[in-house]
Amino acid sequence: MGMNVPDLQTVFIDLQDRSYHIAIRGSLFDNPLSYAELPAASSALIVSNTTVAPLYAARLTTALQGKYANIHTVILPDGEVYKTWQTLNLIFDALLTNGCDRKTVLFALGGGVVGDMTGFAAASYMRGVPFVQVPTTLLAQVDSSVGGKTGINHPLGKNMIGAFYQPLKVVCDLDTLKTLPQRELSAGLAEIIKYGPIADLDFLAWIEDNIAALMARDPAALAHAVKRSCEIKAWVVGQDEREAGLRAILNFGHTFGHAIEAGLGYGEWLHGEAVGCGMVMAAHLSQRLGLVDAAFVQRLTTLIQKAGLPVTGPRLSESDNAGRYLELMRVDKKAEGGEIRFVVIDGPASAAMRNAPDALVREVIDACCA
Image (cartoon, rainbow, N blue to C red; front, side, top):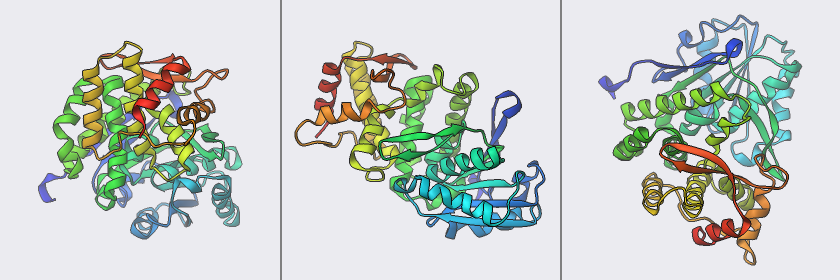
């Protein structure tokens, strides 16, 4: 790719004493300078998975060698279906077996599942050890690695057990996206598209103009998309770290999406695929509530399709499909007192939390599912 390597971009997450930087560029994760400012420690633990470790673990180990005397690695099975207590315990096993103390730094090398579990392990081990995010998927770079949400799934609900716990740094190496399967690239684009309708219509228009370049992995286009996504998320998280209000807008498409993931079985659809389809459903709901017009719904649906994502929801029940969706959405973290809370678009680049009558939600699900 030669001359087309974008310069180093940084995005600052402003959380007082827990503030940190996101570094974005190619050729970052295996450069020792990327980790120079991290605190001193005798040991580090790299947490990765069976897909990513063979590609990148040895290079990260080499980059960290001058800094840590002991570098351990734990390799988890790959996939959303393994985001469980059992898998989390493998990280604690590695920490305890190797006698890791509370200065040990954990490095999350992988996608969102690895990042969420490593962060939760870091939040819990000895009541808190430092960790660094090294996201290797587009979705993790623009969403899950930023903002300190960590956790695991429970058979009854996604991300139900976890902690808010911020990393010391996020290292987004754009070169890792070259090895990403196309399906995973599309899944990441869902979370990028999300930022447009909720926060920045200029960015939405930019994505529409550059969707072919993004699908073709143009380095400059990816660099801009990752940076702008991180800036928007940083702005939201800086105002509402623990999701008391504003941060909930980042869940646009996620209430429907989580129902799809849980209803089909974790990993059947990728998180980004479920979110892409969930955004179409949330846009339809926004329209039925009289908040946006049909043209906006069509605009968003077309873009999600161009990103290679599903726009028609799966059937989760033969007898009462909408009923099954509603049942699953009632266990969502955003439900309050059994009332499902939806993120809707209520104007240009503006999102809000709304309740909607079950009958209306049923109409949306029936209209949006196969």
